[in-house]
Length: 322
Image: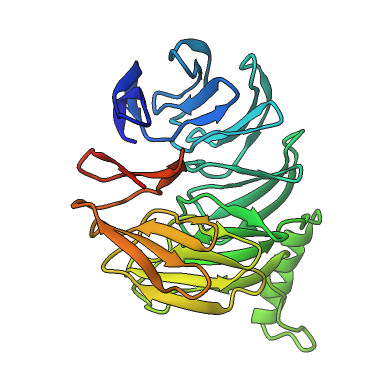
């Protein structure tokens, strides 16, 4: 949400409960844990707000904009900043627990799963850290721009980068000196030194998926279940792929570009497109259950709460769909 205010609305009526002025635009979505709301600002601050009143409980300042939503797990607030750091703060006090430097800016939300933290930067790197200490376990390199968050499940990190989606072993660990060794190995192979085989790929890589249309790209985070992962591309094609090997299960052609991540609930998958259409598909077959036209482009992911979807369109309206 790109605005200079934080608003709390009544889910039934849409009326304003409270509002909190911001010093600059807010591009991230809030994370809620207990009675506290955690929100990053483009003016470099992470705030903890009392959920019912909007009162500031604490604030922490970084060296860059915060555009990715916070992740709150086991009493710790995890997030990244444009200052090339990933942060872990005590959720109750805002005290810094650790911070870890990255090569590029962290512009999207981080994921935490089974004691590991997963984050991607704008230079195409996926980081796997120890969530307790911030120590790096792995850095996977694509060299392609990325602005989407990794999704984690089924022992894999699903990593969008450069318009493609990579399936990376979530438990992989980097071996010290391995990258330098492979660079030398690759050089000897390029020189066609006798007996030198072609170098293997990066450690942890399971598969890589590219959209069917070479002009298309996947720039949002996939939704992941035990059976499949789901994502749409910039040419409006929506995919269901096998969760383990990435092979195609089905695809569906929407009207236009799909920018937001989908949401899976029960046997259905929900998403919107830039033509203003909001879809409900059977997640096993791709068949349309229903679709609704909202009259303006949908560029972000829907949110499901209290039995209804809340969908924001680019004309500034918030729609509630039951």
